Each structure stands twice: as structure tokens, then as C-alpha cells.
Length: 420
Image (cartoon, rainbow, N blue to C red):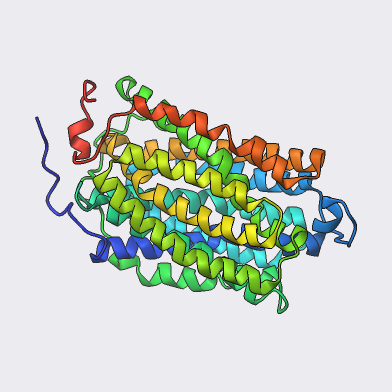
């Protein structure tokens, strides 16, 4: 028996509730990506960069130290799991506002960092809040839309996050010689003002209802009938994140301190990627609605791995081509991946599932960052590190056959244990 979506749950990407969620995702993206965008400057500010031949001498801090710092930031994002679970209890709107606002406050405080490890700790406090906010924004977007509008709505929210991240990178490039990383973090006051400005325009999805009795465990409980789906989704997320973590986490440091890319090239990367990322989102939306969620996830993931390998091929041209292509592939992956993971589970645990999926992504990113950093130190080669870290992702994509295709079906249609 099919279920109609609740009244009011048919918002498209052009409607105000989705646009507001995209603005919040923009704010969270700016706050989250500041650490990655400014990593090269942070390493130089708190390390001892020279013109030596080793990677550590060029970067200012060793790959292991930087990898450990990035890994700590990723591990801290595990705190997003219990935070996301609370959205099933207290609602999407309230938790989204608080998490986004407090997370951006931490980003602003990072501008005052007196040392590398203080910087890591402050960002570690804000990262789970912003990570949970982005996850809840996607859940809210999925619940406010229907099967015919969901991919577009989620694409806009993902695009908002991407524009926020790209803006942080562009601000870093622009202000590198006029205050360094501190300016990037201080400018998080602007997205914080956006969060305050739209706080009264956030809609609670009609699918969500406050539970009379909240019996879920602290970290979120998914019924046994849904656990195989959850574990499958988490395994795929872990694998893709093991590639995307180091691919995104080291790119600006690699560009600044190893390839010695001119600021103009870095700016060109960010500006061009904003266009290719949009193209990727549009292609991902069309593919998710016409080809299917699962095929689009598979194709976009393969494209991401290939372009990430190109990114670390060792020349400025390959850096540019690989970066803009990887952003396009990530954009194509986002609508189908978000739609699939949200459509597979019932409303009462959807935010909890988003939290578990966030945890899988964090674990994958940490594993990828640590492996990548260790390989860079051991081989003095970003190319080898990329090859060994990224390629195993391709094998894990075969798990997609264990999941039902959700194209053309509402989440309510897939709640039954026998649904396939």
C-alpha cells in the first residue's frame, strides 16, 4: 500500500523553506571549511616552513602532525551523532538553529588561536555542531519535499554548503597577505548574522511529530529490520569518505606548499569549481530523478575517485583540472546520495540515521587522512598516497546492489520490513 506525503511536504528548490535551509547550509559550510582552506597558512604560522626538499620542510609542519590535527577535527565530528539524534526528539528547526549558531561562534573564536593545537581544539568544539547542522538541514529538506521535488531540494541545500565552503576558500586566497587565516575565521561573523536573520523563517517539516515517549538510546536506535540497510549505507559512506577526506583536506596545503601554486591559480580553482560544482549538482539532480539514486551514486563516486587521483598528479595544470572535476563529481553525488539515505528510513529515526551516517563519514575521513598522511611521510609522494588511499573505494560500491532503488517512491513506502 502506497502512502501519500503529508500536506505541505512538496516544497521545491525554489520555495522559501528550502532556500532558507540552503542559507543555513551556506553558513555551516563557511564555518566548517575554514580549517581546510587556511591549513597552509596555519601550518606556516605555527610551524617552520623553509625551502628544503622534504614535504615537512615545504609545509612547515610534518604530514603526520597535520594529518593528526585534521584527524582530530574529523573525530570531533563524531559528536554530531548524538547531536543529530536529538533532532528526532526536539525537532529539526530548534536543533538546526542552535547548532549552526554555536558552531559559527567557535569558528570566530579560532581567529584568536595562539598555537596550532589551540586552533585544533577550538575547531574540534565547533565541528560536531556544524556537521550535525548540515545533516539536519538535509533531513529537513527531504521531509519538506516529495519524490518529484526531493533531488532538486537536496541539490540546493548541498549547493549552499558548497558555496559556503568555496567562499571560505576564496576569502582565504584573497586575504592571505592581509591578516592570514585569522581574517577568514573572523569573517564567520557574516554567516552568523545570516543565521540570526533567517531564524524566524525556518519551517518545521510536517512529517516530524514530537514523540510522546522517546525510547531511543542515547546514540540513536534503529529497528532491527532497518539495520542491514543502515550498515550498508554506512559502509558506502565510510569508503567514499576515506577518499574525500584526504582529497579535500590536503588540497590547499598541497597547492600552497608543495606545488607552489600562485594565489591567482588557487583563486581560479575555487571560481571554476563553483561553476563545475553547480553543473555537477544539476547533472546529479537530473540523474537521480531519471536514471535512479543507486546508479547515480555509483557513477559519481567513480568520477570522484578518478578526478581526485588527477588532482595529486604533481603539476599545477593537473591540480586545477583534478580539483574542478572532483568538485563536479561530488556535486553529482550529493543529490542522489542524500535522497537515497533519507528515503530508506522512517521519520522517527531519520535524523538518528543521519547521525550514524555522519559517524561513518567521520570514521572514513579519519582513516583516509591518517593513511594518506603516513604515506606522504613514508614515500614523499602525494601521488602514491592518493593511489593507495582512493582506489579501494571502487570495490565497496558493489554494496549498492543490497539497497532498494527509491526513485519514484516516498519514504513512507519503504518503511515496511519487507520493502525492497
